[in-house]
Image (cartoon, rainbow, N blue to C red; front, top):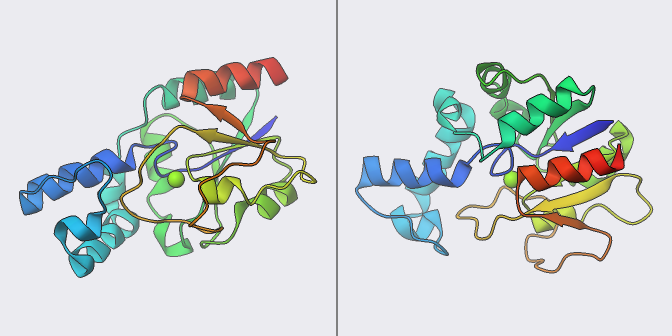
Length: 190
Ligand SMILES: [Mg+2]
């Protein structure tokens, strides 16, 4: 099957890198539920996010728990992965390098902050895994792609697309706690 996955905070642990950088560079603590801007100031926060997305600081992003092993197993079973990210074109230069560093093969498709639902349909994705409710809600019931929401919780910055104020998920959305549960879902459907 062709499987779409989001990059930041789905395949990688974006939030932990922000926490580490806030601590290393500003000697402050990014607390759960708070935004990066309220912790280190709006301008510094915007520059930091830009640096994480556009420079090789992206390579410091750690994989989210179990993501690499699950992806490797599913690739070995013949599934094809597409990293469907809301990042802009200029923000994906280091994703290929990140993938090879972790022994993963996938094509990268940046939506440039556009809604992922219609693009996933065009790409013929069977599933799409994402941590953003606003993006998950751009997958409508007339689409063939099954949207899967991975548990995330609070997000200190917005990398959205879709309606960023939405908090309710549609009934056709599947929910998983993490990558191992996503693997079972794929294996059951395959
Ligand atoms: Mg994300």
